[in-house]
Image (tube, rainbow, N blue to C red; front, side, top):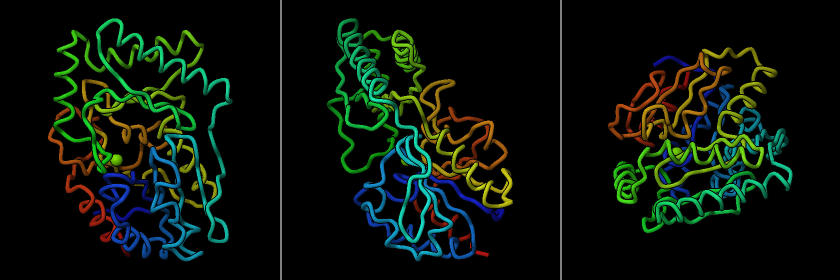
Length: 289
Ligand SMILES: [Mg+2]
């Protein structure tokens, strides 16, 4: 395997099995690379309290932390570390008015799905810059927060039963259309269980942290690797949240998918390596110089 100078990676389902799973294996694989000056960037939809119990800095030395970044909240927060403590060097938190409009957009999506198709949803409003619309209200994920293969089939079946022709595209277009009504360009993503509606995505995290690394080092776009477990598309042209790490700025890097889901619907620039969390940690261990 090629040796990379920077590795961007998803957290839940890629570096750890779940938020409650032990992080020891992940941090053990990261430490030696940070020592060698390899830049590591966690790119996760969650917020800092959910990364290693909100104390990832406790697992590394001050020196190691200088090479670690966190891009969190699907574009909302970008952290580096100073004197062993995380600090947010860039954020994309909407003004309160915009955030309230995002809430209104999601409530309108809920109403339209309910009125037109009799399709039930629940909405999680408490995120700093987006809402999560639960499309499978009867179907919990437990502690494993990542996409599971059976969910795709369940959601398609449920939508068909409610006469929602047009599949996932219908949901994305609905979000965009209602967004426009409020004068907001929304960035909707869907991973089968949740339709997430906000104004930023992992693209913003990848671009901002890549830009930061470029200011600090000579690392080139093609010396970066991007790992995730949610590249899979649910339908033609609709890809998972990790596919958002691929942007005009990062496109020259190498993209890897550890997901075991056997679906053809992936972007053509991603390499499917499978192996889940262990597959990714094996890659990290193999990156030691
Ligand atoms: Mg994931």
